Image (cartoon, rainbow, N blue to C red; front, side, top):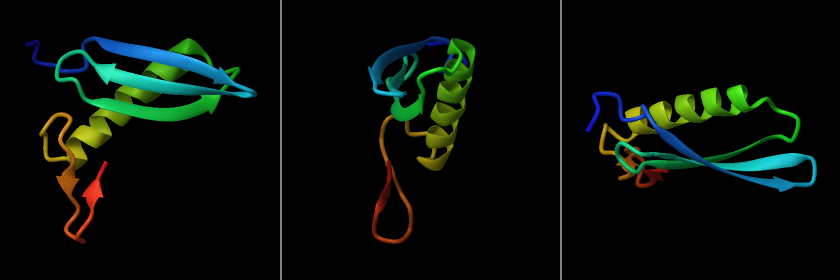
Length: 78
């Protein structure tokens, strides 16, 4: 596995009206995130946001890849 789990990110884009539903999966560890972006968003912006969100979710889950972490309040961080 490469040192950067987000070296390759797979994107699924679905247009819904004036928005795009984005699902991003890190090929390195299988972590998946989703978000909504404006339909006129640039592809580079969507890729940058996907990389940032994957990194954020990974840091919140304690580096456990796709496994949600405990938020200390009885819930889980997804």
